[in-house]
Length: 366
Image (cartoon, rainbow, N blue to C red; front, side, top):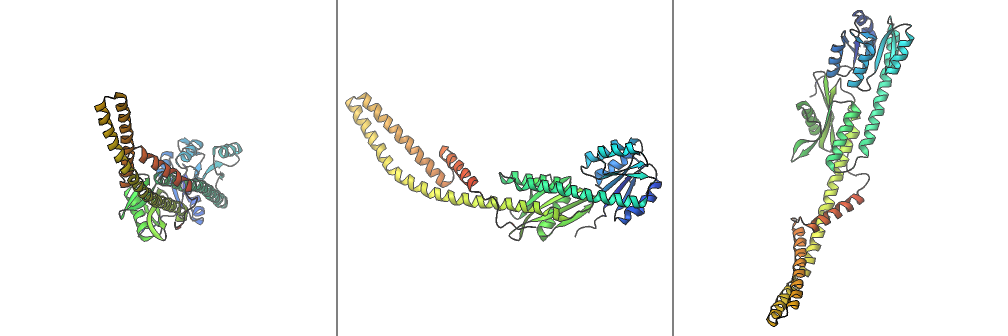
């Protein structure tokens, strides 16, 4: 069972403790818990533990310039909505704040109604920006191609970018055990929540020390074949944002399995053909080898050295053909490593690549 998850949070950074009493009720009316820090270092440390939904930052926060602190916050949490608290009438400061990337500015002294309106607008704009980033990451995941491992790694990276997570990983069942196959090295909590989602077939989430782990199952034909999990600061968001990425994992697995099945079927057919060809060639080659040997001995007795050399060339050609037969038989047994084996494998790769469908069937959504 997942632990109770924390409310969305607004981080307020201001050296004046009286601001807390003014902002608290206005933020609570928007459903936001308020975290208050007076020092920039403490604010950045908190940001490392948990990503808030919005930040209200005094123009001169403690010992650091507000713009510098805002830049540091954006470097740690791209896309984080930051509102600057500035003196009323400081138009130059407002213009620079917008240029520096502030979502908005709020005048001091603070008016609660203005706080509610501007913070609400910043939250909406931030959600829209996250949605755009999520769509861009999803688009990148949908066009991924190549070996299964590369596709799964790309999906894990896209899921991390779309959700702003600090870590993401793809897990699949291998020999009935859930194993990480792509993404970041999985902390114990990430693996545990992924196992919960994979075993139950429904999304799972858990809050641990101001961080949240979310996971959705990877469903193939209605059965969980693994899970996609992300971990990041802040409260749990809608797990539906991860669902398209889990579906892309399922599609990649289905396509890989289909390609493996086709490869095995084609390989078996080629093996049967190889056996027949080898059988047809082997008997005549054996006869030619015998005739060449008899011819060489006969010519040696008559002293015809040039004719003997021709007979040796015939024997070498027969040996070369016999080597080709051995390669064919080795491929049929699945132990070949020679040029013929490599040529057939390259042809298989090219044929399967050309015949690979643009979409897959059987991959269930999450």
